Image (cartoon, rainbow, N blue to C red; front, side, top):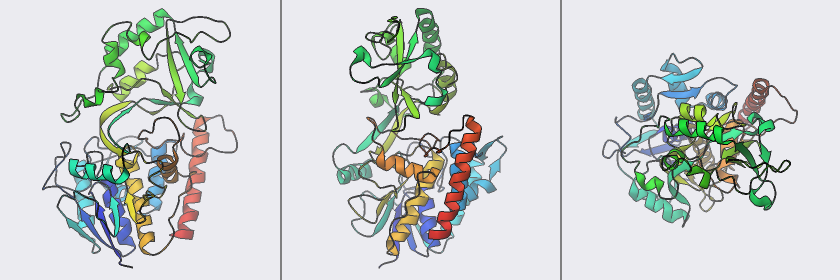
Length: 436
């Protein structure tokens, strides 16, 4: 078999995929459209540019992102190697000198004898050969159109409007109740009831909360089918109580008490460990979401696994069309990686690039795809994007809610997460020794 591969996109995912292929002595052509053409979010000509934040998030094993980076280090990640060498003080987080990091990424990739970088835009998926597409959330219009045609109608999204997600364990069960509106169907929702006084206090803080900065390319198209909760609230004090906080049909199932407003939480995973706050898509900053949404009865001590977002984000509806190896179901040897697959964040994008690169190499070597176990952070991401069965597939950060839980029950969260991490790293080391 021809031992050549094509990688499209020079971000974290694309660089990781190319790096893993090169480790297998496979000749890689890496296409990056900069500097010929840039997205509105990019400023430099370097590979591996971090455009939103200089932090690669937490670096402890009691955090999902920390566990994921520990697994990536075991897998020979280029991103973590460069980040560890260019890090700056940031407490328990891994933050880097962004220019130094991108320069090191660029130097390592361009000097690798198995990687050839070509600075040109690719507008179509190559019809033949082993290919990894990792063009990111701002994929060019021409390539986006071609990807949409490849997957078929309804499988490519251009805007990300996701509500916050909290862990079930962190909800105060004494202040909430389960019920479906008008008792239709099963009690699928957790309901957080508000008195008029509680709603008034919440409303005041919501409409005055600080919103995140929007780039010029993140225009009002995102609002067409989904309005930010704070924008809806600004239309009138009672607008929310006729919308997502409508209390009608949600009397308390035991006391019959009626409420001024009710916030509903909907189960977001098959195991019931994660719940999203229905209708709370938002432009609020993450810190303001934590502050304001913690005013909701029952969520005072909520652990947020994902904050609400609304931004330009080209991504595939991956369940059913991508496997956990990030390979397309319909064409062997064609892989996708990065945020366009439904993983959210720099670290997750890089990890998906590692998985895609390893499996692209295995494809060329005539080996079966390597499926990482969902008890690891790496495997949990692949499992999430390929098998999610909820009502609304949305990009997801790594978190312990999507990693398979323990068979034993450990009440202390820190101890439970530490044990999950220990299990994951042990299994990852065993997998590497056996397969890599």
